[in-house]
Image 1 (cartoon, rainbow, N blue to C red):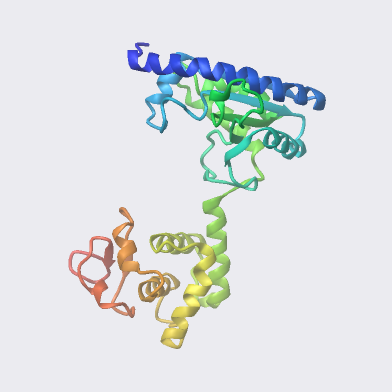
Image 2: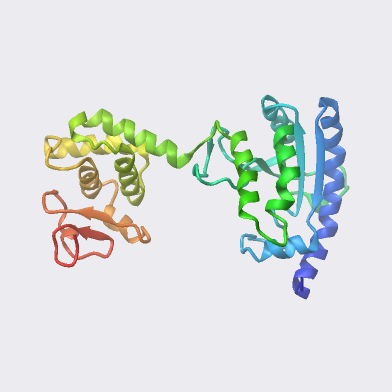
Length: 309
């Protein structure tokens, strides 16, 4: 692989510092892992790996990538992960935790990408004069159970670092990974469940479709356009019900939510809609909407108008 001279220079400059950081972290963390019967592993990015990561466009600071140096603490059981996390944070300053919540993941159920617990931490200022230039330098600490680590060892090169791609092999590898994560719930699914619970609380059963999931997905999209969360739905609908004096039976739950967003002074939907990307709202003449929504708008589908539904 041909690597640009500037990339080589960046790697060489970072490599020296991060190797010193690697030795320092090992001195602090490895003995404490040994005391608990845990494993400690570490690596500094190779030139080729560094160059490929740069080309993803996801490194904000090429001179100090967040994972140029990374280490892994391998514990025996899931229950020990919190203990390992506490140990790491007693030695280094936390910058970011991924995922933020152990019971949630940003992945959808159909997505099996890497999602082990990662702590992005920074080296604290030392009381001695040694390696003061490393203060504040960020690195990655992965926390895994033995089972998670074994999966990674068995499949990492196959899935991530290979000169070819095998869909069946990758699929099997990630299916095994999925079994390790079966207790997690992605944020989108959690929101959809919240929306379903809210609409069932607000509307009678005969006002709701059999396909509650699709209704919830549609409402969730409208809420997202209005920069509102699933937790805001009940309050939003109640405010609109107070405004009009009833819960109209001629409007679907989705239509009433859109109407509530449109008439909310807090939401300012007209402004939010301009920043909604390609997402669109569906409206019709039976809805009580502000005048600005009657004007042709590329983010609004008006049912019944020429050229639309």
